[in-house]
Image (cartoon, rainbow, N blue to C red; front, side, top):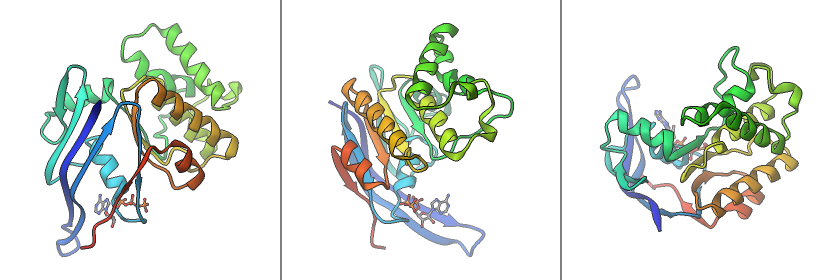
Length: 228
Ligand SMILES: Nc1ncnc2c1ncn2[C@@H]1O[C@H](COP(=O)(O)OP(=O)(O)OP(=O)(O)O)[C@@H](O)[C@H]1O
C-alpha cells in the first residue's frame, strides 16, 4: 500500500544574487513508497538527494509536480497544501531526522526528545518513559538527560536528534544521514530502530552515505541526478 507518491517533481534553483544563474536539480522525478518500505536516495554529491528529501518535508517548494502524502484518511498534495495543512502533516504523519540537532538554549535533552509526543497530547509521564527508553537504546548517558544539548558532542547531539525523530510512530519517516557522526555500535542501534519502524509499517525515505548501513536498511535504491 503506497503512502507517498511523488509525481513529476521538478526543481530549479535560481541564484538571483549571482547573475540569475539557474541550477536545475530535479527534473520529472517520480517515486512511490509503500508502508513498511525503506527507499534510499542514491547518487553522487550534488545530485539532489537533500533537495528531494527537503521537498518531501515541504521545506522546499518544487516548481512543478505533486507530492501526495497519505495523511490519516485523506491524501494531501504538499505542493499545493496551505501552510496550516503542512504543519498538521508534519505533526501527525511525517517525521524528520536532520543531520544536525537544532539546539535550543536551556531546554534539556529529555524535553527536546519528548516534545513531539507531548504536542500530540500524551501524558507527560508516558512521554518521559518513551524518551528515556530511546535515549537508553541510543546510549546517551543518563547524566546528560537533564542538560541542554548545546555542549554535547556531535554524536551525542545526533543521537538526541534521532530519539526525537523516532518518539512518535510516524507513518512516514525522512532520514537525512542519521548515522553520519556515529560509531559502529550507535549506527547499529539506529539500524535496529529503522528495522523496527519498518516492521510496524512506517515508510522511510533516507540518505545514507555509509554503504554498510545502506545495505542493511534499503529495500531499494532510488537513483538521483540529471544530466543538464
Ligand atoms: N537552497 C539552495 N539554493 C541554491 N542552490 C541549492 C540550494 N540547495 C541545493 N542547491 C544546489 O542543488 C544541487 C543539489 O544539492 P543537494 O544538497 O540536493 O545535493 P546532494 O545530492 O544532497 O549532495 P550531498 O551528497 O553532497 O549532500 C547542488 O548543486 C546545490 O548547490
